[in-house]
Length: 88
Image (tube, rainbow, N blue to C red; front, top):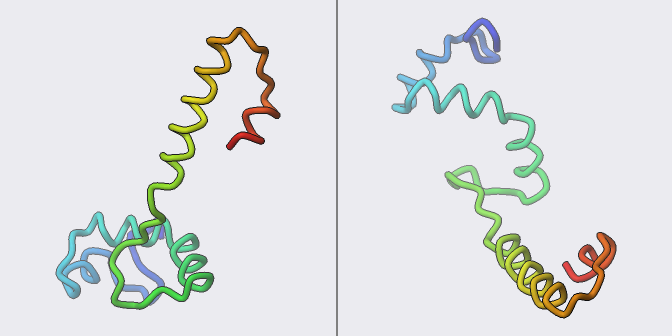
């Protein structure tokens, strides 16, 4: 990959032109290849799918835990890391 070539020996610029995408898109795909393949195998993603969206559950959890933490700290209750993990 450091030579600017894909697995078949084609230059990234050539592959990008063939597929009508930017060179940086090919570079990003090759850089994240292992993660993309792992997700595809685990989730059996359709080849036509363009993006992997995992949802916003993480943001909701973070927000809820932060709200809980602020409430508990306002009551001057000591909070441990384990308590935060359990709440999450």
